[in-house]
Length: 256
Image (cartoon, rainbow, N blue to C red; front, side):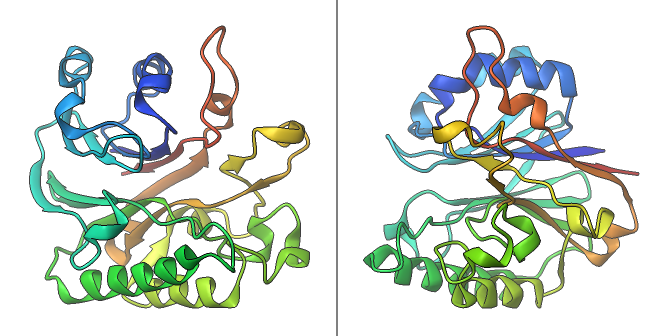
């Protein structure tokens, strides 16, 4: 079973690239973030033609998440309880025996911005929701977490400590989420690799390897026993002909 996550940074802008990726990589289930598309305008027919069902929690111009799956999924949850004002950022479904959630966690903007405090509160709500909800043994939470888990996940290493995405407060809340029983599947598979999933569009960051690993697939302990591989699909951070890439690369996990 191939699962994946991808912040596509605008569905309309990335639709043809997403179609190409689905055809080439053939994931069984995908969490998408930052659709920037209302639920009612999601192009279900496009994905149906490629063999995918879609569950969508969209929003005009901002945010938005979706789950694409080859087999029909059973919807479980739309939105993070108590956090409606932060927009469309969570959706959960059962896909076969796998409980699959995708999240688009708040950015926070800057340490001085009011959204930074809202980001920290949102992570507390996410942890509480995950901890309180009864779930099956095989569960995955994937998405754009907008937190760099460890200095080696940043091109700047520990010199960036204290900056947005790299603060102790953010990392403490991320670790609290892991404390509910979730495991970073990429890091479990490749404990020492430095690899990134996001690069700024500016300053040639991608080619200079100035990136961050903020797109993650987290799984429960039983999921790790099925883990065959985990990778970041850097090829799809590159422009394909006239198709412009997102500033994020897909992350792919293969399960036995």
